[in-house]
Length: 110
Image: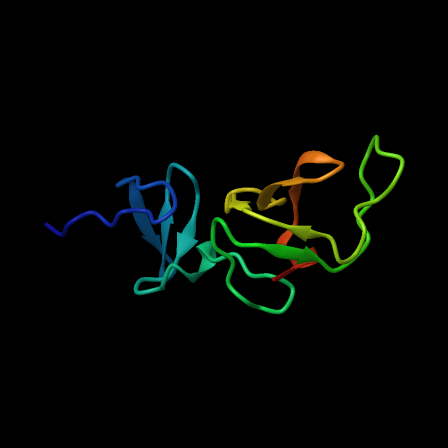
């Protein structure tokens, strides 16, 4: 009997093969055998890989709900924290705004 394939997303051993792909029955993640874990990498607007603790620069004015002014283009954000499981995949603190989540497509590595 073959060993179970572990899901790279949720670490479940309850996986099965379907049409050449492996599917996790717990989180429904699909991948091909031998696929690398590049999908967990978070890239900035220029395609550079971001890491926890990096500094980034906002490349576009971003409106903030409930705030009278947007986060301006060129604002530097230090010490980011990455959240690969979310649409807004960067947690940070911005001076004058406080804690917020940003999308990596609107920042570049500083």
